Amino acid sequence: MLRFMTPGCGAIRPGHLGAHDIWIRHLDEGTYLKEAWRCDLATGIFQLGQRTAALLGTSAPSCGVIDMVRAYDRKDRPTVLNILEQATASSSSFCFTAMVRAPTSQAAQLFCVGRSVLDTPGGEDLLQGVFAFPRERVMLCA
Image 1 (tube, rainbow, N blue to C red):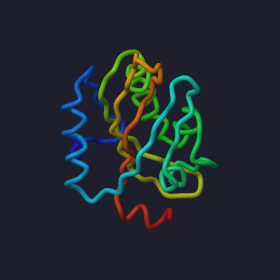
Image 2 (tube, rainbow, N blue to C red):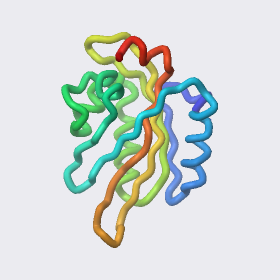
Image 3 (cartoon, rainbow, N blue to C red):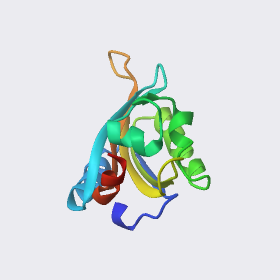
């Protein structure tokens, strides 16, 4: 599915980890660099990889959702925020893609595959997954 996604598209599958695995396999088949990310829902803080943080133009690998989404193209933001909001309501798998327009770099397409883990016995509710972008884009940001 990801190969054919255009910026601003996304999907969410409540409680469907099989979808998550399929989306990750699509990324593995492509020429993407992947970096893990996670968000502790108690604090709302996202932990990003260094290259993803640079691509998004955040000042540090830790940031809030507003800092992260600010780099996305305006027309893609509602899709991203809607999917993240749905993912915090119930355990699910999700993916989306958006154009990133960081202030110091050219536009690039960024893919996200993630899942939400909620109502755990330890109480650690979180979002986690990978961001992926074309390898040639990484050379410009590294």
